[in-house]
Length: 250
Image (cartoon, rainbow, N blue to C red; front, side, top):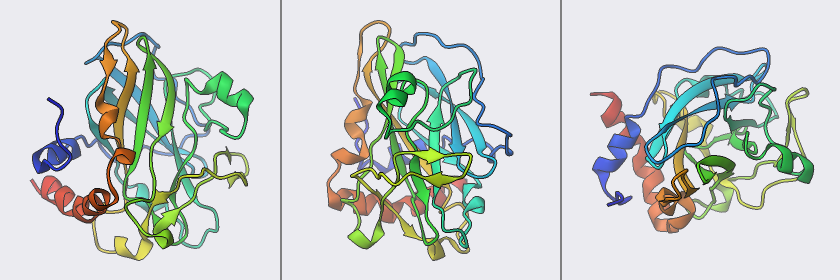
């Protein structure tokens, strides 16, 4: 039976999926981490998660298909530059030989060519706000990753806390495109990070949709954030740091 969002024990277990601190900067957005293969429920899949620093920084995670996981980019808040006018973004990629640059989701051509390899950019921080949690849905088709979808929204926060992000990002200039996604992401004030260890580190909640290589349906995306009511999301954001502190103190 799938865990209920209101079950505190499940959230603590998910929050235990922590890996060591954020890897050092790389010259390019490289994600050559092995071979691609068709996967079934329970198989492990490796992802590269990037931050749009200059040069980009990367962390590699291994997640099992159809298992709920929260990925913590420990130390990512250290790279938020409050003096910069440019937002910071994240994106996710699977293994590939070419540069794993963020998908240009304003370009139909790039989406047709690379949507199975890399995600659109997802806003993480602005000069005054930071996202405490974002949701990534990994879509499979017969065991092959077909696309990634950032499934966020602002129903759990007010308009002043809603961070709008661009659907393209030029990594050479570090400038985001003018076209924005219709859905925003809830963010909290940068000042709330002070003196609170890892409260502003990027956390990515991963769920799955589609079918595995055996044709079995993946259902964990039923608990993606957009399925939750505004009241439930608001309660989640309010309690998330308390839960996280209880886990890391053990």
